[in-house]
Amino acid sequence: MASIFKLLSLITLFLALIFQANGECSLSDIKIMHYTTNDYAHGMPVWKLNITNNCVCTQSQVKLNCTGFQTYLEDDPAILNAHENECLVKKGEPIHSYESLIFRYAWEPKFQFHPISSQIQCS
Ligand SMILES: *[C@@H]1O[C@H](CO)[C@@H](O)[C@H](O)[C@H]1NC(C)=O
Ligand SMILES: *[C@@H]1O[C@H](CO)[C@@H](O)[C@H](O)[C@H]1NC(C)=O
Image 1: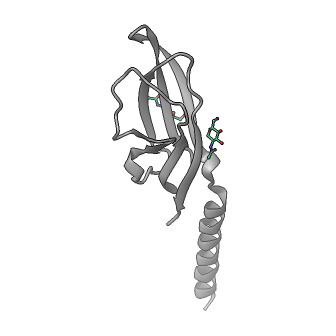
Image 2: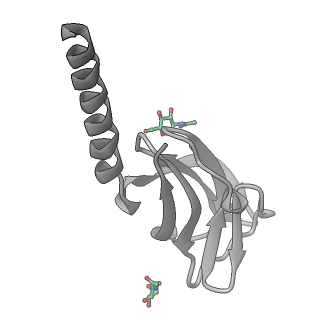
């Protein structure tokens, strides 16, 4: 009998952890890091962007504000697809926990990308 209670309390703890994890994630867990590179394209400096889902849960349909974004490098739509004023990350596919995506663009000055929306899926 005692073992059943032990099991139940373990399950409760487990569920509590899941709900806690769920509440811990938000759009602000999409971290965007900018790095300079030594490369130039058409006289414009090339920047490296590291987009990380810094969260235990998967996030999909991640969109960044791309109002005014321009680049001299050929876009890699598999990573960042600019459409009107929004950039869809990884074609909207799930970005898993702590997964990083690297994107390069060439422009001056560097562009400030801000996440505007995502769908958070905790399993
Ligand atoms: C991208 O950022 C993440 C989190 O800071 C880091 O773990 C990862 O190594 C970075 N990737 C590259 C290629 O810089
Ligand atoms: C996107 O950025 C532009 C320019 O900074 C700003 O005017 C606009 O309100 C932003 N849109 C969203 C949805 O944050």
